[in-house]
Length: 134
Image 1 (cartoon, helix red, strand yellow):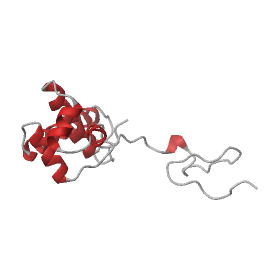
Image 2 (image 1 turned 90 degrees about the vertical axis):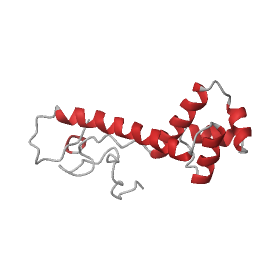
Image 3 (image 1 turned 45 degrees about the vertical axis):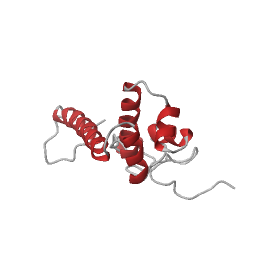
């Protein structure tokens, strides 16, 4: 017997069910939203950029930080949310302070926010309407 429950938010109605206007199944009624970049992705990118800029290998930095190479790789790719202690030892292995890594991440986040604002500035809708960048 087919599942008759309402699909969770963000899902389209199953085949055979007609979506109600303005409900979850109506794709035209839902705005498309670009999500904020995740902090773990931004910090991972900062660490990877610094490591590659120094022409160092994952193995070299992981050994200097005394963490596993696969774990460092996962942090750099934004797949793991590293603790501040781990970020501090990786930063030190790269010759940086934790505050340097965070400052670079903040600049990247500000750059991403600026790009979204530029897209929103081109939006002809009145300022009273919520702005959703597509």
